[in-house]
Length: 87
Length: 239
Image 1 (cartoon, each protein chain N blue to C red):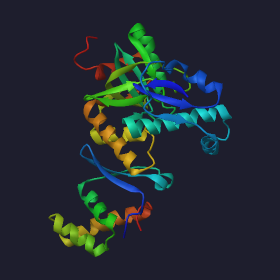
Image 2: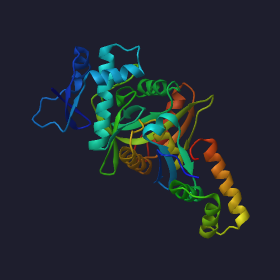
Image 3: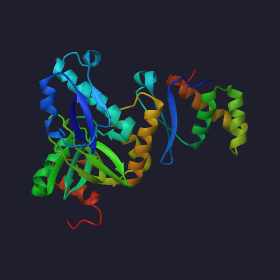
Image 4: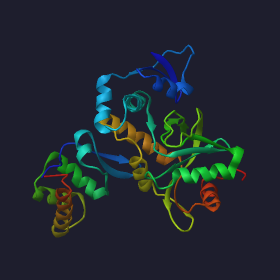
């Protein structure tokens, strides 16, 4: 899965936000607010990453078991797909 | 080319319609400083605007095109942003009231004018310029003052930012930094590319850090005015 072109992640005053720029700004009319762990996942997805590798990265970065990581990753990637932000 | 000065920036403007010259007259500049950039409007710019607002006639389109290009240059070259808000001063300290169009910013600030009388002034009731200067947020007037044409060629340090919502009772609270950031982002022009977006976010981040922000639920009354003013004025104001 990979985040589509045209989104920019920035840390601004302790908050992570994603804003669309250029052509994407015409299609995506909003701002995405991320917490620390979803910002971590976002950065991985910007490069393009397989689901299982994303889960593995989460378990390595955070003190969580695989099941928890899988659930969180699935929830996040589902939301991104639904919002047409990643494919 | 005619010279103008807005937000302390001297620039040149090339345009075609007498209406534009009349519109900009309060900001014309006849000093010796060189222009930092020139904004010129051609037929392509007019057609670009016509596609967005086909109901406007050519001189209105030129006006909008000029504003768009000017805002672009101000952000790109001078780190100055546009912020959709009603910007006013009380005792020469500025307060920015922000909300989606139609919520009641102008109504609230009109009550400020009635309540504070001579202590009050409009900077810009619709789209003032904002610049960070030496750890202060400064708001500047410009000719694009919105529906009611309320504004002056003045500037002031911003003491507080207030987001408004309509309510039956008046209540105010501080906003958290993430709320403030999203509020500010919502009411600024979205830049077209990453470099400009980075500039904008840097400026917004400083605004969040330098100026206290509040969320006001209010009705249409002087009580609403005192509720917002008392929260925002800070300890260094007497009354």
